[in-house]
Amino acid sequence: MTAEHDTELFERACRVIPGGVSSPVRAWGPVGGTPRFLRSASGAWVTDESGRRLVDLIGSWGPAILGHTHPEVVAAVREAAGRALSFGAPTAAEVDLAELICARVAPVEQVRFVSTGTEATMTAIRLARAATGRDLLVKFAGCYHGHSDSLLVAAGSGLATAGRPSSAGVPDAIAALTLVVPYNDVDALEALFAERGDQIAAVITEPAPANMGVIVPDAGFNAAIRRITAAHGALMIADEVLTGFRCSFTGEWGREQQAGESWVPDLFTFGKVVGGGMPLAALGGPRDLMELLAPVGPVYQAGTLSGNPLATAAGIATLSRVDEALMTTIDRVADSVTDSAHRALDAAGVPHRVQRVGSLFSIFFGESAGERPVRDFTDAQAQDLAAHKAFFHAVDDAGVLLPPSAFEAWFVSAAHDDQALEVIDRAMRAGAEAAARV
Ligand code: PMP
Image (cartoon, rainbow, N blue to C red):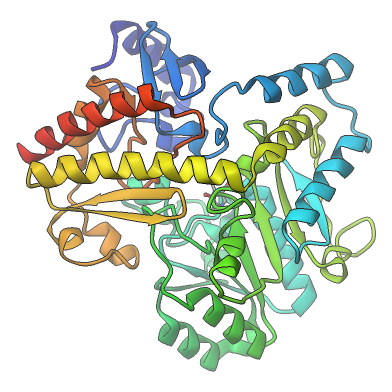
């Protein structure tokens, strides 16, 4: 139940902002009701405009890995703000953050900072096209890589939520350059490359998809993408905007490396955690590719606020704390939340499946998910959205803020302490009972 205050604010918002929100998944469209307007946040908790405190499992959709308003991150941003909000000139902090990323993700020799994940993937694609002299792009159905024209084809996240995975306003001529393959389907990828491999510039993938709910890549799937692209002279772009510095202290690439899988993409994209809650994202790769970017090379890319000093300060303060020990803490939090949810749903007899990669997870509702793993977008779309809706509202009433969509991951942080986990445990039981009544 949302407070009267939020309803009034939402009415005002809808008059001056389309749908009342600055980004579609913030609306409660798929679950119904008025979105909560948030005023402040600390650790695992958010406070809405009516003063209600809730445990947050959205975490700004990924950046808040240390919890909200971590004192060291806030201090770093305050210190930077005292010096300048923006220069439009090179800064030492950009070099520090770039060095931090290169040191952590071994295949990355250079990075270019941008303000959003969308810009990072858009630029990576432009770079791949320039490097190969080819136009076609391959993506997987249900993966989301931001809202640039080429990538709004069979996309997950807010498009999946809205039940129309492509956008109006994207010319057919542009959409035709993006070829779509089902996730986890090596045969389909092989077949596509057999037919058009010499025209394909790149395959872009979420190495652990999290925008159609969380999908576990089959063992060897990322390595197969690498093998097939390399065989045909195409690039592999690992979009780690969401998984980077979350699935492991490097990301999904690093997690699979540790597990003995050996594949190295040509380009990485990062966002969310790397900006510590400020607008910052990056693309990275080997020097020879990255130096195709202007001003060294012919691929143009730019940004007034790119490498903004507040954002780089937040990124450095956050990444410096993201280490193996922090990952162990977050994994334990994920264990606790998934155990609570699974136990409660089982006890209430609600068919479901928890899918998880590192600390990243989501819950799929419905008979089909209960019976077998959700491996691709078609499986994900077979979810029981009515059960999710009932679950969402009961969990919200019990004081826990979940993503208002069945197609999104839940985001935990290192600040989800025992008190927060107890509230979550109670809320999961309330949610499960509500879902069982559907
Ligand atoms: N790639 C992935 C994998 C994402 O999850 C997102 C955003 N959720 C993006 C790209 C786009 O990032 P942004 O919203 O910062 O443009």
